[in-house]
Length: 79
Image 1 (tube, rainbow, N blue to C red):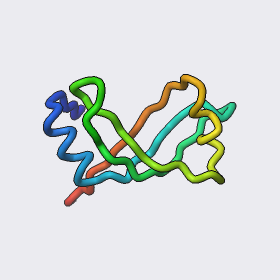
Image 2 (image 1 turned 90 degrees about the horizontal axis):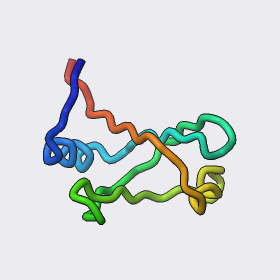
Image 3 (image 1 turned 180 degrees about the vertical axis):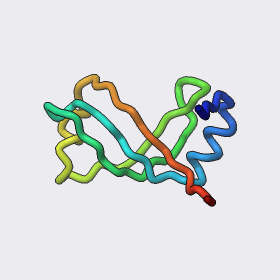
Image 4 (image 1 turned 120 degrees about the horizontal axis):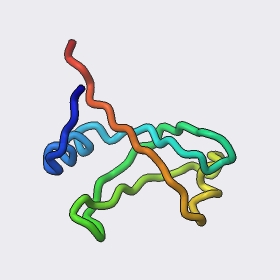
């Protein structure tokens, strides 16, 4: 199983492939939304992801509360 721990490698991949899948349970059930994200400096060395959630997407209504999310970035495979 592939596992990457080097922060600089992960940041490079996120910058090169910013279209991510954001998985949450915020809207009353599991939801997977495809959102372009930008990595910015943040309060930790890992940085902060910023993106735009459309008003038509129910996820934006849950951003006022504290929710857990999983963000999945996928680099294009050359296979």
